[in-house]
Image 1 (cartoon, rainbow, N blue to C red):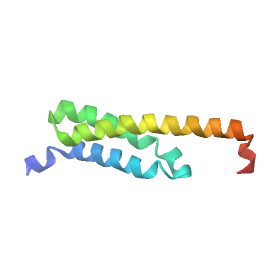
Image 2 (image 1 turned 90 degrees about the vertical axis):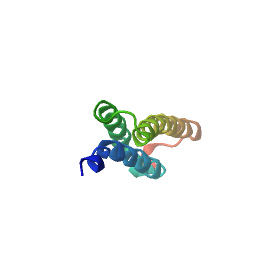
Image 3 (image 1 turned 60 degrees about the horizontal axis):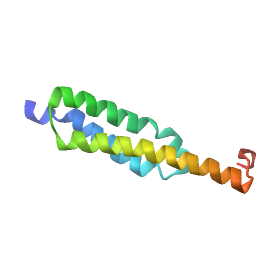
Image 4 (image 1 turned 120 degrees about the vertical axis):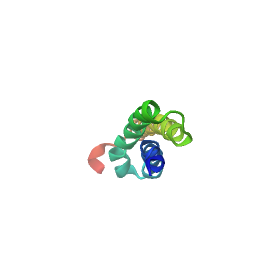
Length: 92
């Protein structure tokens, strides 16, 4: 029984990373999904100390980092689009 609980943090980290990839493509939900990659990274770091090397931990860490980079890139592209098209947020 203890062996099945050994990888719980790694599994949750990977689930957070995957869920971010799904949620980041929905504009208004992606603002709220900025929490999940941070949780994925934190859980991966904690899992490294408690569980050692694990593929799920590595996947959660990589997905979390790439998701934050992608989120920032999408926000920058949205701001550039608003500036060049002359749109304001009042239209929404």
